[in-house]
Image 1 (cartoon, rainbow, N blue to C red):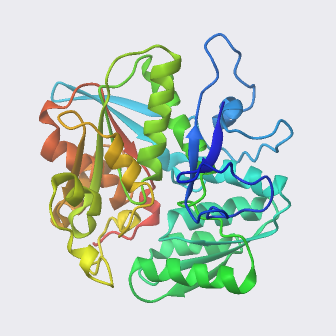
Image 2: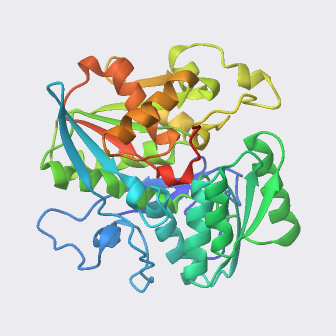
Length: 370
């Protein structure tokens, strides 16, 4: 059974509309229960993530909004005697992992007759929503920070999205989107605040399990709002419970040092951004992770185990070398993705194998410095 409810008062997600906050207590909705199809039950014959459609908590007549998301390659390399596996989420339709969640959300939008939505994004989530919305007849309004990558903006505009640039830190785009929602009444199709995308993202974990034919020893992923990291954790929990697999998997979350609130909290250190109203003031090449207050941060911190899991930060000067190093290995990904390779190089000498690195977005979304 897969269910969505308020994380505070446990109200089941309403059957109409698209509220991004609980109408009863103002809390955030979450994926409360999640389960994959049981062993021995045939998977759907649909492609990509839709093989696991029964895990999404959708009604039986929900449309399949498939554009090619899911079933991404897992490339296994033996590097200096270490078994590494690179999960190529950059090969999803809009070139990022966000498509897994957007596809599920788009099915919800169609079922509920929603024709226009609002979102804020530093790039990948907005590009994904713009593309899926356009493909299925929904108009999108995307608020972006002025420092957002040009290629990502081009993706949104090419899909016909109404793109609104907002000056200042990333949080300003979020506040501008909320104001627009209040003024227009259009639903806020937030990739961070709506719970539906988590079920789509959790399929990454099941794919890894099927491709490796075992659970990995370590999974490494960037952390912004935490939807990728938390979605993988939910998928991992479901696998371990339903497949009766008791192997522990080390989870490693990575943030840029210029904006690493969860790393600071994990280590018991002060996070300067918490006391500065403007938030993370220094831009990072890993723009997809520049989130001052991660929506899923509290759940992630509570779920991680001291002595097994890790949250680490990467200095800015180490991001671009990791970007070029991955490119030389055949993986052309954006700097946010390069965080995981930098983290492995710096901290991964004793991580359990096989080590899975989640490559979240394409290098085609980034203008490298020549």
